Image: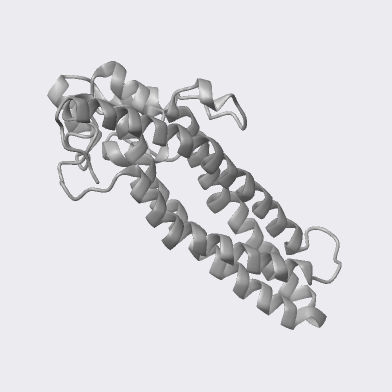
Length: 248
């Protein structure tokens, strides 16, 4: 599923939706980090490149595969797959669960108390999931992309107080991911106490989302984070050997 994008989008917002667009930026030498909040069309104008042609290339990028040997591919491919997961969670799974809950509450009045608790638990979890996705797509993933493709500005923010990736991951896990995992466990306990109903009982749909989310987090922790931290260490080592200060 390709998000709605246009040359009026900023380079940063494009990379937040389709990280593989970085391949196109690199090939055309369009530096997305120089003015990340400018529309793509303005960045293209400086290079005398037609922004509509660039956007057509981005929109023609193939959808990410559901599985792959991610360690042999550029990090942008794995980030692209993880962002596609996010879209699936929020734009497909979540609306279907809301509809299933509404239908169940309208038809299974004998389980009204359980369904009310389930709906409250689901909505609390869904709010944390959206917050988790926003944090990853606006902070963590761009940070990793910049480490992989710093262009001539260098891999670090100009702000001397900027965090290393390791610090970002600790903050993210403490503030966002930890809360999401706790909410998922609480939701799981609610699911375990559910009455037996045929599909499309909302329990089945919530369980499916939680299974997909488990695989998503496992891919982040088991593959993305080790690859990105190894990349950061290599960048830091090169910077230190060259006398360049790095984030603490």
